[in-house]
Image 1 (cartoon, one colour):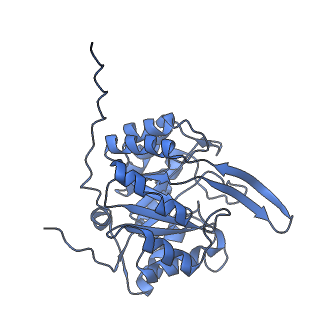
Image 2 (spheres, helix red, strand yellow):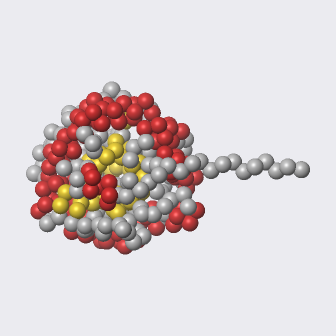
Image 3 (cartoon, rainbow, N blue to C red):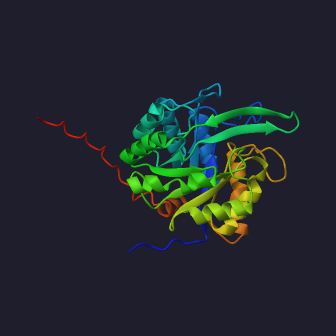
Length: 303
């Protein structure tokens, strides 16, 4: 008999490093596997039960090297039992490296971007775009990543930057490559995606299938307000140096742990409870996931 989910429990995820911010912006952003392992420990001790992982080279540039992801897993596991969530985001159509580190490292969760979008940053001061690109995520690309996750027994976290991404999961369910219960991340305040409004989360949370879990990811200065909104609406939350560098008082955070401390206090202040790693595993249905064998090739027709 399954135990009903306690609605007061809140899973806190911490996104440790990302790929865009660098030490010129914040000197405390971790680069190496050891530094990422230490930041994961700080996040865990402050109340996070999940860490979202991007890999970096030692100079801070992004990498998708399976060997680097394996080293990160080793460094995290030396220090804490926190749940691992690996990014699979890439501007390229070739996801060979992503599927390789998913199959080899087998994190409990892997983030899966659910739709193509304009991905841009605009400077009102300069009246110009800091960057302006298309982030391509076709169904073909999504299915390749989903197939690797299914074969490895890794839970997909569905990254939805807009309501169309959220609604667009239904063909994958119909095909059987995506299976309930589902886990969503609603990213707000990325130019090209949904705006950081209470109504945005209300809409997104109504689109998802019953019994799904969801969290909010507030990018930049809207983060703390959007975390508060998710807490009131019953969602989970994510913070971390990937998403926002500053504490609510405007000072730059010195670690991911400092950001998680604020998030955990917010959880308690609204009358909810911070989920432990063990509770998060149950809430996210991680122990129920089993590796699925790759589909066998169709037999060759005979004369």
